[in-house]
Length: 142
Ligand SMILES: Nc1ncnc2c1ncn2[C@@H]1O[C@H](COP(=O)(O)OP(=O)(O)OP(=O)(O)O)[C@@H](O)[C@H]1O
Ligand SMILES: [Mg+2]
Image 1 (cartoon, rainbow, N blue to C red):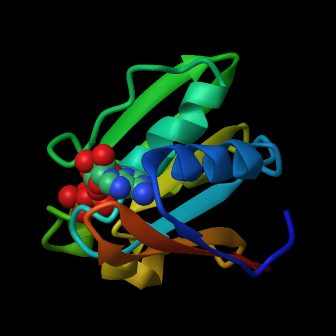
Image 2: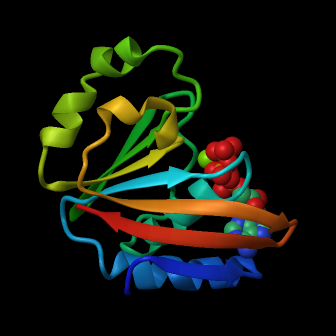
């Protein structure tokens, strides 16, 4: 996959196809930031990527702040949407999660607390086109 990557996703299956393609470019310790309005498909994308790794039970972590999955690979799945103050992130040990180099970390609503994000990341952004259609933009920052 070449970056920046931009594509119109007209169906859920097209989103799954791009997620499959993207999952193959991810290393063992990458951080993936996900942004875009409510319901644009951030969780759907994380679920699709993880499904390629044999992890099928991915759900939105918004109440827990973070979900962890293990299946050979280790996955941390954050959602910043319900966090009011950055201290809440420090309280759950956010920095320790990031320093655990062997895990892939996904962060939905990452733009709400830009100050805590690693500079090395993939940024996956969704724009809503209509009920079935999204535009995805993936950039690689280093
Ligand atoms: N082309 C498409 N790609 C992905 N999802 C789609 C597409 N068309 C429709 N959808 C639907 O859009 C919804 C996206 O919901 P999802 O929970 O993934 O959004 P989200 O960005 O995580 O929202 P939130 O900000 O609440 O966390 C799903 O119900 C999915 O079925
Ligand atoms: Mg979500």
